[in-house]
Length: 327
Image (cartoon, rainbow, N blue to C red; front, side):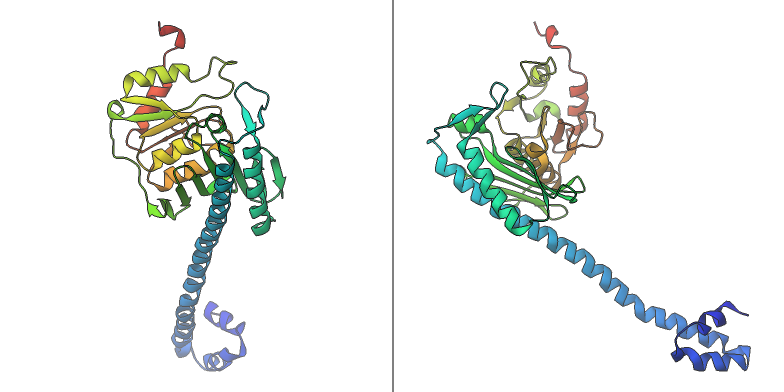
């Protein structure tokens, strides 16, 4: 028996007249197939609308998370400004230079309260409080309530709040707020990057020799030979300059908006870079490991550039001579 007849036989009763007519002769086989194909044709728009609504819902959800992160970052920035210049309790967390203040803790408390109110089912990784919330959730908020604590403690004007959302380990939302200069950097995966709600883009510098780079030094720099000193010296010779600001989040934000052309650093935690790497990517930049392979949020190392100098900078990092040769 033809397969088209078998299919019609299993269809709802609305197709029964076609089945009966089919039994009287084979000349109605084409109409049967025609009506089936026509019904599929009219169903297709419904499937496309369903897919379209799914993607729009995803974008809307990301936008909602972006607004939550923004609310938290702005509130935390306000807390930081209220403490600025008035600190009474500056402590080291174990390693020399790794500071924590009452401002760090108050800023983090505000962020945690806002996230707890909006997304209590999500997980959180916060610099001062560690892992909180739902450990099994695919949503993980990586929070640095005060990136640049040493700067802040000395009233050096370079610090920020950084809030990133990882979904299944991949940065999807990033907000960095510089409260002193009132600059709000934001990005959502596929939504672009902005500073104070205006689109930003990476620089167009195409050669390492004409670039301005930024980097940093980890708290363990006194304990390991892999401390970025050699890379700093080497690249200072190859570029128009290398700056060390003391805030990984702002280094990434400034690379995203074209103020610097590339950034590299080691010894980083997820909360240092979760927001910034997405902002760079959404601004048209490139983010990888030092060797150009895929960036891993838990690796502690990042190379972020405008894309045009990426391969050259990666090659230079891999070719750095030992620090002992700089005599």
